Amino acid sequence: MITRLLPWALFLVAGSLRFAVPAARPLHHDEGSNFIFLLRLIREGTWDYDPANYHGPILYYLGAIPLRLLGMSEATFRMVPALIGSLMAPLVWGLRDRIGRAGAATAGLLVAVSPCLVYYSRSQIHEIHLAFFSLCMAVSVSRALTRGGAAGEAGPCPGWWILAGLAGGAMLATKETAMASVGAIAVAGVAWGHGLPARPRPRDLGGAVLACAGVVLLFYTDFFRDPAALAAIPEGVRAWSGRGLSGEGHDKPWWYFVALLAREEAWTIGLGTIGIVLAVGRRHAFAIGLGAWAGLTLGVYSLVPYKTPWLALNPLLPILLIAGFGFDAVWRASSPAGRCAMAAVLAVIVPVGAVRAWDRAVLRPDVDGVSGLVY
Image (cartoon, rainbow, N blue to C red; front, side, top):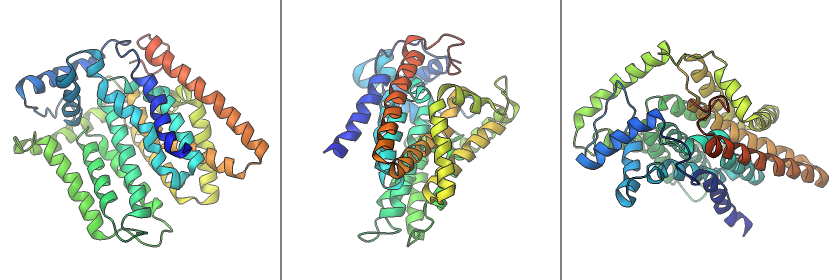
């Protein structure tokens, strides 16, 4: 009963921080630009990809739904990021077979109260969409390797590979930098498959690739009404690669994201460090894969001069999952007294994180100097 209710509880905790007082923060500059695109999509019924200035179409097509159904307001404009940000917490429960039940519950709580995730789940910009679909892809790949077409408990089942491909396509249809996350999760998947009795079949991987390509084709062509838009995708990759390397006024030192996460998510960094040390020491393939995902995304985004704070969500997500694994590993090895102490520590961390997230996202969301999240 508890395990059935836990995902719902995680969603409620996450949602209470993401849906409350949606107009507490004025629209960010980027939100204003996105709102113009949404209005154009709603009024004219079309969306045109601008590779030189803006990102992919997923945000606009999803964001138009509540605006059409419920009218124009800050609440409806920000409803989709609040919803998918809230869904990330229970979605972590899908990894319970890999990081343990205590680990998945802990990681879900950390996701629910993460100041960074809460802050950007309340903004209609692309990064929370990318984080959500990244988690969907990671969960799908993990489940596929253990249940669908690899180990195949009840015979091959390509469904999880199809879901992984759909999530990967949604990532690529969100923004150009998704390639870094897709590649990092693919590398992690190699580690996740280590030691399993079977490997994914070529047709399973082919199905995932076709599903991924189908999502990209569907959204970038405005549901097949503008096939020529596909030719603009390489131009967009070139344009944003050039911006990333030049900085264009957003250049920061290489340690920018490390400092930001240490400032806003110190407890997550601490638990994540414990988790990766235990993963390497125990040769835990799945946790090592999470470490590769975190290390690759952090490395890529740290080396590129162009840096904005919301990009920190990309390495933060796997770090949160590693933190859950670390908690579970110590929990399993602890005595009853030790587990009581760990529960007490978690009972402090979660409320502190929630209060900090509320302060950042609701009470002082646009006050310079309060946090590194204001930009």
